[in-house]
Image (cartoon, rainbow, N blue to C red; front, side):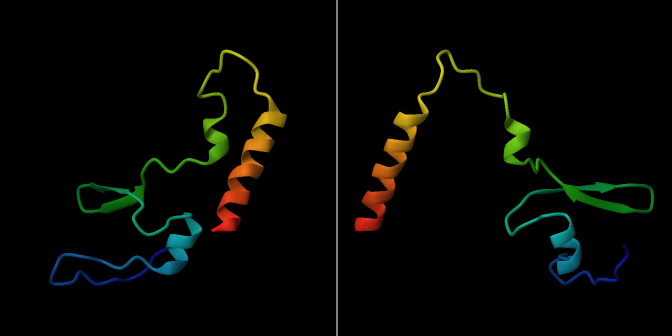
Length: 82
């Protein structure tokens, strides 16, 4: 997908929304800008989904789902009471 854009007086460009959405980017996300011989390449940096992190943290003992659920419900009740 190619799009014509203009460099502003502050050396900024606007990336079309269609491209931003197709890459799953959001405001304040980081991108890598690379210079080739006569090209500029912009690509997402470090965009990971929650599932990419599965197994990254090792726990020593199994989780007690009932305790976690009760704690979650208490926290949600506190927030709802505000």
